Image (cartoon, rainbow, N blue to C red; front, side):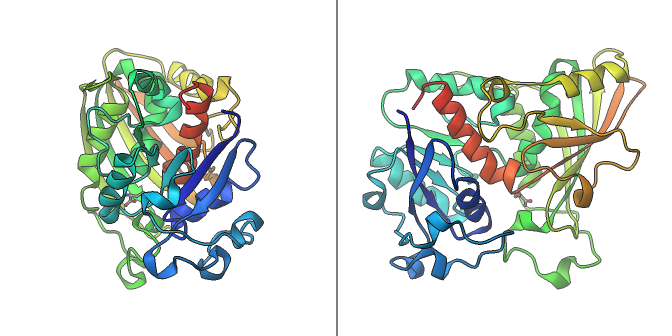
Length: 339
Ligand SMILES: N[C@@H](CC=O)C(=O)O
């Protein structure tokens, strides 16, 4: 397959808009359908979308007439990309799968299904290869945005880790455009995000484990997580303390993080960052306002003391954590000849 035709579900939402933007002028992925909620179906994308990203609505998308999520509206696409909210995704995606369509989805239902690969391409691209043994169509899931960001710097050091203690500082955009009121978050920190702590623990364990066709074997490490919502627009941060198995020099950890490259980099995939983990030497890095990169993860404050590694990790929750990871997964699947 030379070109890959896709449709985007939830195309007017925060994550959907990023998908529309990132796929403008893509070298081999072509968006042929955009879908939105029933009230918008039949109208032009450019007239309906409340565009919030820098720049204009990409030209290719402006005149596309919005379709429904019904499988009959997607029958001529190779892959459906789903940016649907969690509460509606399951019903819609199940119908698409039942009709024989392939789906890559950002929504949380089915992430822990033992047969469904949960993919952060640099971390576990090899889990996708089980799909070669699957007859018919498939579902692939993105991890939770925070799990996507945190799993990246864990990958090159995963065998050194005995257990993890994580505190997150998650931006408001993670809750969606209408997710949290200004009065609730301005000048405030909310130390609870529903369901998030369980997801991060389970998903990191799945991605760093081994995937087989009908089951997976988790990484098997204890991951203790506290999640907080902070008054920042974009970028999720995590303070990680990793208890290590052996003593290891801080410099060796930094070398491993800086030198990390994976399949997407080797294949020079269009959406892959050249340097997936940026270790920043500045004493006050990383900061969402200064250090946010769309697809790379920024790491600072690296310190090893008494066999405990501390690092602060920052990533773009809407791009690396959602829209960009979907596209990079599709590019990885094409490079693996799964499409
Ligand atoms: N569940 C996450 C979504 C990622 O952006 C959050 O609430 O921040």
